[in-house]
Structure formats: structure tokens, C-alpha cells
Image 1 (cartoon, rainbow, N blue to C red):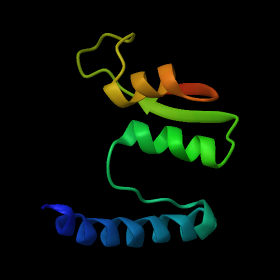
Image 2: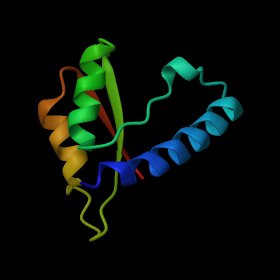
Image 3: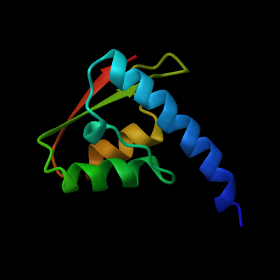
Length: 88
């Protein structure tokens, strides 16, 4: 399958995340790189970490402010905690 294609991308993402983490003092145990459904990973990680709040960015390419992207919309509807949507 295509699973082996994910590894270089994962390694690159971990490298970039590590650099961002160093810049903003984010400890490695709070840095996560996952492959797959964004919504599934957000909800799973929120449950695993017993989160009380998820902050998610959304944008509206069409200019309508009430339309969310599919990941933001699904997270809002299925999250185990409160979700704060940030317009970006």
C-alpha cells in the first residue's frame, strides 16, 4: 500500500514540530504527529489527555462566516469537551 509513503512526511513533520516546540517552549511530550483522519485523531487525543477544551482554527474560502471546514465541523459535533473555534 501507500503506508510507506507516510514515513518521510511523518519524519519531516516531527522535525519541523520539534523546531517550533523549541522556539515556543513546547515540551516534546506535548507535541504530536499523526497520520490519518484529522477529526479522529483530535477526538482520540482529547479523550486520551482528558482535555477540557479544544481550540481549532477554521476559515471560510467562500466568504461566508458560518461555514466551517469538515474537520472543524466534525470536531465541534463529536468532541468530548468544549470546542473554541478561531477564525483564521
